[in-house]
Image (tube, rainbow over all chains, first blue to last red; front, side, top):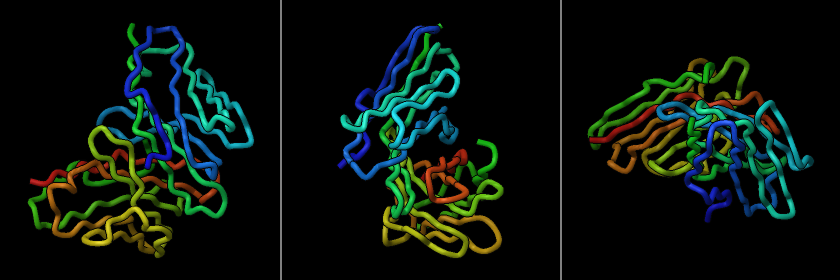
Length: 114
Length: 114
């Protein structure tokens, strides 16, 4: 049973446009959410996170939105650049009292065309 | 991914042999996590350790797999009597604490079983 779902395996976007990557979750105990970017043959690189007390967090070109009632979060990248082409993983973590491990989605492969 | 060091990057073993994967966390990090990634899948949690203690091993197969994080030296993930199904990328992550803090990943060990 997948607790974190990324329903789009791939996404193609033109350079300069906005990329929107989506993630849904089922576990209402999740209270911290993260996005990681992964290039082939490398480990995931932390991009941005958001706690459940917020609905938006912004860092440069990256913004994460959280809709708790819909159990949905999204990552916006604007403007998209060819170097953003990678696999993006959504991850979630339960609140205090949990053991701290992350639950990952299966990833969305983003291709940014020049 | 500077900081979390994993070695070897690639490991080839024959069925029945033992595999040892090593992970040195980022400086100042005392929490270590191991994850496994199968092709086209997200990362799956295996085990969470602090120095000299296994905190959560709920994601680790009960047979053939073991992990340690000694007082001195790297964390070790050990797989005995490897089988073809153990072929995967194994990632280690570390964090300074258990709360709302991102985990930082190494570049992984790609294990291939002949």
